[in-house]
Length: 387
Image (cartoon, rainbow, N blue to C red):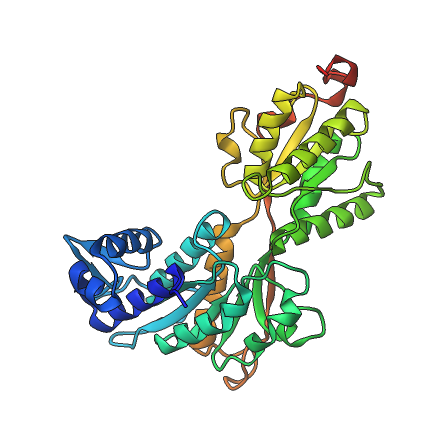
């Protein structure tokens, strides 16, 4: 079977970690690929912070450094000459949403004098256990785990192994099924239900009727946004104007994406929606562009809030967006794991009892921009939309 790029990256990282540093030509010979391929891999891994590049050579991050930044006051200090902690992180990708989560964890680890090593699952949950084993083999003493789950059943089908890990583990942006093994683990998550509630209340405050939800269903965040929408409407005593419009990637399924846009346009034309919440940013930007081609203008005919706030501010019409605290999720999780590894006892335990497990929910923010426009009584009526 042909080796995947992810598998080649793992081998490359293992070689560099074992040597401390290596030349590109040496790595190419060891991996059995061309120097061009290795240079391309090294550039990608360096951009993700997993390797350092210097004049034709690559090195393990921090190799050769004799000092570490001082640990913050709220984390136990290592003390002079103490052994460096190594924590492992498994993430489904290193771009878009999780780039900021990784950055937060990396900064917290560095501030505490620990080293973070990273592996990427590429949203293949069946490979998560193997990736985690690789982190342990590479010296990780504790793990930050964001499984590559995509389907609602994945926590049950592809999650039991996490509870059996032999080292302290913190779940990132993932929740176990209540009452099952993973629910007993430490976790740090964004409270997406609160984020959706912020968006709905903001649109209602502008005078709109209940906003329509346009969302994917292919990630834990997407599933949480859908659940959060139901929670928000129940909390506010509202009923949805229409069923949720299922969105898909425009690249992966152009026809499905067009169906979603047409369904939203039809709702606006029929006067069934003057506002919408769209997950995610990329879909929201493309939906706004396509609606404009169909004669529906944002915010004149439709007020729109995006969910994620990765690129929402860069749209032609800057999009109001819910911003999950991604950086803080990574930071809090790394600090919690380091606290576990350094054995901080529970308060009042006499120094013998482990601190209680924690489920930490961090609240998203709403960043208001141009796409919400004016209150609905000044919006263009459906009759004014080009057909």
